[in-house]
Image (cartoon, rainbow, N blue to C red):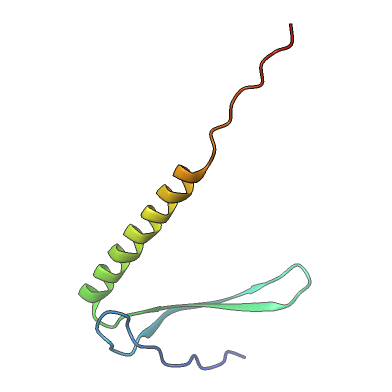
Length: 78
């Protein structure tokens, strides 16, 4: 039984987002997990939101990679 999702506004234009896709996945223990994807009803607005999130994701990934310490090879014992 699927529950009704609460209404959520688009972060850019404020219109009520619509459900694009819903699917149920079962865990190893058999508990169902319901996943849903919601999108802005305005396709052009959604493209802009997707681009903004992609840029944020890329920037975050760059920061994570920059903060990683490079692995230095262990010198062989003579």
